[in-house]
Amino acid sequence: MLAALLAEGHHLVCAVRRPPPSHHARLTYIAADFVQDTDKSVWLAHLRNVDAVINAVGIFREQGKQTFARLHTETPCALFAACAESDSVRLVLHLSALGADKDADTPYHLSKKAADDFLARLPLRSFIVQPSLVYGNDGASATAFKTLASMPFSMRFGRAPQLVQPIHVDDLVAAMAALIRQPLPVAGDNGTARRVPLVGPVALPFTQYLRTLRAGMGMGRLPVLPLPGFVAGLLARLKLGWLDPDALRMLNRGNHADADITARLLGRPARSPDTFVDNPAAERAQAKLGWLLPLLRWSIAFVWIATAIVSAGVYPVQDSYQLLERSGVPPAYAPLMLYGAVGVDLLLGIGTLLLRRRRWLWLLQLGLIGFYTVFIAWKLPEFVLHPYGPLTKNLPMLAAIWLLYELEEK
Image (cartoon, rainbow, N blue to C red; front, side, top):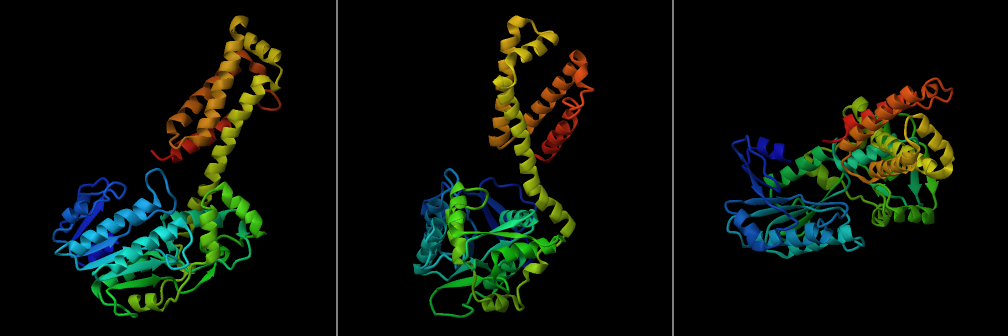
């Protein structure tokens, strides 16, 4: 949106939590935080000489202080109230969501609807933009859906049609820019607020959308495993990945609308989902890494935890003591070494599963496995040529951990 509005010659003031330096003459950043700035007066101070406001803040899942009530309702309402009192604001463009209507029944949609209704009651010319699923190459939802599409199989959760009507982010931006250029209702009532559904050209079942993305990435047919509704509900309660009870309810309800308004704003039909993928090879690789890297991380965590359990007593303790003694550990220190190693292995496994930032943990594991390998090869050389390869198997383990270290975000 930023690039599109700058290209049209607008002067922009962007409210962000941590303002970066601006290198454009028509672009200014200011500090603002939707978690904290719930007072109308805070926003009034930011609105001097601003004639149009675009609110695009939103979350799909709550996390800590980032709640639906705060980010979707309380702070947007404070912003909209400030717009209504401002001497300069003439237009508000609010990015809501398709489904935030009288049939809304999830906290996500209800919180969106509350802000939509508040804005609609104000004496402001406003557009309440309600898109369906939005696809952007690097967007969180698009990345998640491409990951699902690249997996060996997908699942269909129940028997509802589960229709979606995805719109490409470039079309969404172009349509919103068109609303700014012509701030008159495209169609509908004569009120000062206008709800505008923005959708792609075709509604299709969610699993077919995944198949479309898969085909766009140059992959073969996606097998779909149908699940009964009660099984889907049980899986949703586990909150694995993107699926939770609210997401399942929204998926079952469907997410589609008339595409005519979008086409009129764009002056052409919106981009079809079978053209969304721009770089099949790169996006296919990224999508596969989206599920292969977690699988690799979980398997490494399992190795550490399983090693701790085996060492704690599944493998005969006296045999472990003998190995330690042959390695040069005095018998008096053998229990400390054995159970100390058990504790370290267990902590490494749990940390691999739970920690969000793991670069230092990967380095620790690399150093520890490297030390074990060299030390055991020196003290117990028979394990180097053992037919089961207890030491040589450390080489792919080291390579896998190094891969995770390199791909971990800094």
